[in-house]
Length: 197
Length: 197
Image 1: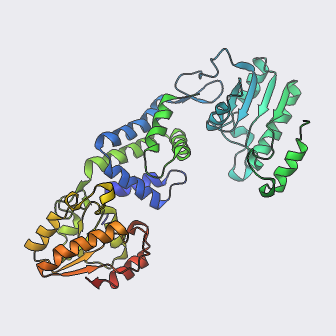
Image 2: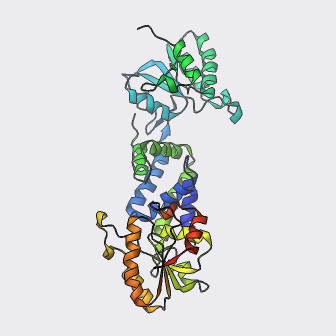
Image 3: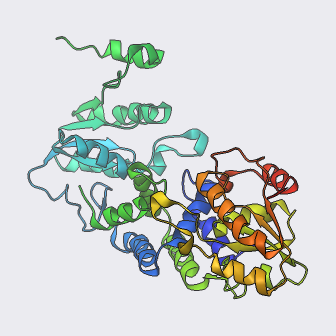
């Protein structure tokens, strides 16, 4: 038994990250079970995101209005830029409520193995912003993995000659974790970044 | 930062079974990343399933044409009915390629705790089929858990007085598990080892 419409939906769900065949089938049977109204809401929500959501022309964040809420917020410190790899990283930092500067999204990280070089990232526009907007401080919040570290090192070499402060987010032990289970590189970084009490 | 269209999509994804907040956000960012054409394919596939897929008026299986492919297939043995809880269970049995009879979907199992009694299941139509269509054999393939066993016992008491053979799939399936997650070989063994009730 094979129903084309169901097979088609399973195929589409399977394209999503972290969704295998079994999960795609489970989700398809969920769609079969719900009302047409509910299915319509989901389909509409998908299309609305594509229709309404744009990238901010200043920072590259996702937004419904350009420039984005953060770039147009006069209470935010536009002289400080936090550089992240993806728009979703902004969500994580915003959730802390601790950061009052602006952002810049690179849209990835340098990864020679995946054929991604500096020319594929939004680096020119970052340098342009720093030069023309009186930016005083850049915090590099790329991921603490090989690609993110390489990207941070690369950016720091470009930014420091511009006479601004360049920071890297601290790498150390996650709060609530145990020393016993931490890897050596993390512990090394935690020791290097020790703070006086 | 909160973007209404994205929040809306996260909310819709979160309604799906086994999808939590983090996964819903990951899926939403996937939608943001793909092209409008690809998003449209997904949204369409969802609506197509709702528009095209119906339940077979004979067996209750999902189908694009009524009666379904299995019920209209003359090579299938219509004197043998395999009773399952959900349409997705048919997929699992069909994948073994070992079964040549027809099906009957109950649309659930007896579960007093969830307020589901025999009157909420497609039992009348099963009895009607058995009585009027010269059915000689019924294989009860409800799940090997408490609800499925109770349902099988209930059905067996109704069916045996009709003078037909009533079988229960073998407990080659791990007790407490669900048919949906069983592998093909196990399901094949379960069919081969069916026991008269």
